[in-house]
Length: 544
Image: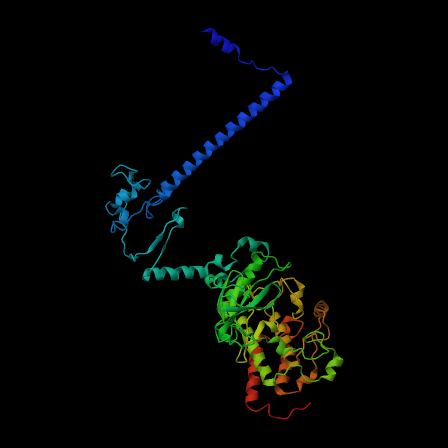
């Protein structure tokens, strides 16, 4: 080495020696930075490898033709059709035995077994006679062969036979006569020997119709061809009216147009209430109403029902009925249908303006609607929420039942051969009998008879049954103590119709359920009244 080179080497600056504690701090800082940089490089490499593996899996599994099977389902299907070996386009050149021995990981088939040694070689062909091929659609699941099914485009006699057989087994199987959710059933309302009717759990929603509607208030936006109007709410539901804004010229702008029933409908959906939690039990109550309205919609005493989805229902629109029966026209009325005996002495006539013939028609129509429930062929149904606002008036003057959201399909006691009583979950209001407020599970369809008596009470008088008191809690205490609403005896002699309606009230509003008049006797009694009026019995002068 030359001297200049040595001199150059010697001119290099020697490292400065730091104290021991400072030198250690600097080294630890350098080590930490190097470790952090190395960790970042490692993480980047791991992410690159993971992304590459994901892309390889994606292109390998889903990169084939839509008719090819994925690699994790190749062992699921080991059957074939010997008489239609070319039913699949991608296997038209292969035999049936090769079909059962191949998987499609790649474009070329891979043999699972040597030729002639496959388990399927010993299988005999199944005659394709009972179910001929109608080019049905086969749905194959990735979760196993038990989830596969076929959608038949056309059905033959064998398919129809199996459909009828399945329905027959469904009707007689005890499993379908119980509640659809065993855990919920065991917790609350399972009774010995009591079985629920299976038909009330069969749902047929039409959700697509509901998804086309919006609760849009603005009439200027062409969101949908309906004007939406909020109507009212009940304990746990609220209703909206949908009106066709293109029905009449200017209907989109003018708001005083009287719409016919054919150009409007009502939607009810769930309303949040702190005392009504959203759970399976309460949701089941809404679905039960949908099933019942669907089954009874063809009856002339029920409103037309257009469909349901989840907790929303859509039905026929009607006019207000409750405020025609109980009008608020007097200044001294603090609440609708409330009054004192002194005030009634100054106003002896009924507060509503209906004629006796109209009252009889309304009472008979409401009784026939309840008779449809109590006499339903597939099981007795209790309405369980009788009130005037459950009925609406149509344009032709008839009243129809439009709300059965608290209805109960009574269970059947197989041992005793009778219907089982039930417990009322939300006995609010003051239009129910005493057994509804006891909470001991003794309510039956006779609770509707008490409620029906209160309806006729209001038809005759234009007042609520306990018109002296506004406090519903106080009225419930009176009912629990065995008291009944008091009606002025003058209605017994005002006319033939009013006198017989007065008798219906006295026979329905009774403390003991077994003493009440059943709904079928009420219908017959009112029909006899119509016949008496038609024969001229109403023409004689009345004696006060």
